[in-house]
Image 1 (cartoon, one colour):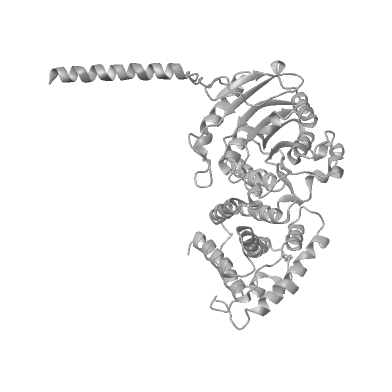
Image 2 (tube, helix red, strand yellow):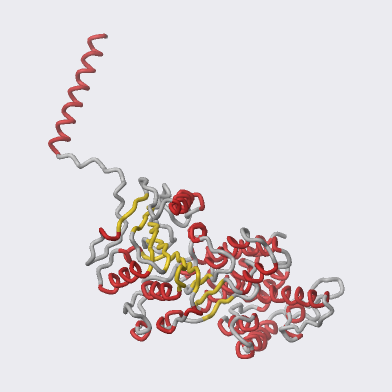
Length: 492
């Protein structure tokens, strides 16, 4: 049976259960079971590696809480032993009253947040089992047991399917959309930033970790696959923070499926950190993010920032600028009104960005890029450490209306990526086309610092004609028609 069919079967069972009633519940419940199945393969692999070295492996989980003992006890024939397997109410009681409390305690026992033990504790402190029927839970466990995590090919296929579930969750509405940024857009942003092995990459509004996962894929396929590089990529490259419980769990699982075994993802409110406390050791070479916008932060949270505002995305932008190393590169999705708002905080933040960073590129995205979001957005590409003198703008036009059934794709991004990467060869000036143009910051109004995209290269539409001109043309056409008819009559 294919992995895709297995995922469909799991969803079908969850649909029947009274406890799971949305795409968000489906992926949350699939995630914790999937994680424990992955953990079993992970531990077996580590035990095999230790055995080859003649060493003993210390299992993370106690015997009774390992997958083969509580979830899938099997007989000598390799099939489920129905005499040992829990099914029905006893299975739900074990999961709710024993398994989850046991796993949640790992958060207190773990040495530090980077360890897989800590991640286990975090996940099972935050999630609850919502599957009410033990018979449904038994069926789901049996489906998940069919999945294999051993080879890169298997992990790649599973990660692709998991991404599809995240996308569906985003399309389902409610607050699911904030976890999902279109992957073609992420890939284009990463291509332009071009992260390198040895650099630290950060997303302080990580959501489902789409930016970190795609950056891992980009770097993995371009690097020399030495033991040192692989270890660096695994352990000291990708860093994230996420506030929401479900997003944190999904992000952990997504990174694991992409091949990052113990993700450096911390469950915390990023905006709760005072930016004045950020030191050089806390800074990153690359920041890629799509922070939530439209939120209203409390006064006590605003005190952590130099420019006070209730707008969540504006606070995140301050955090990102402070968190970049000098010479560090960032690509940040933000609401397009950030470029033109005339309130004091917005103007001050644009001034801070232009003075402390080189804002070299603004990508103006079409409506519908973010399904269900209902807002226009731009991507800011900047480098920290020198002021902005010129900005190159590109107005993306997919040539069609974007939406749930017609999403952004990689082909839509090709021209932008090609032009944006070529501009580096022409000393700060980007290519001028019908969709792209340059501005001099010295020519921007110094009081408003309005940076909104105003394309000077769009072909001008013909001016509207007066009613008299339209009537005159109609009369001319009538006369021409009458003349032609008369000529035809003369010939008959």
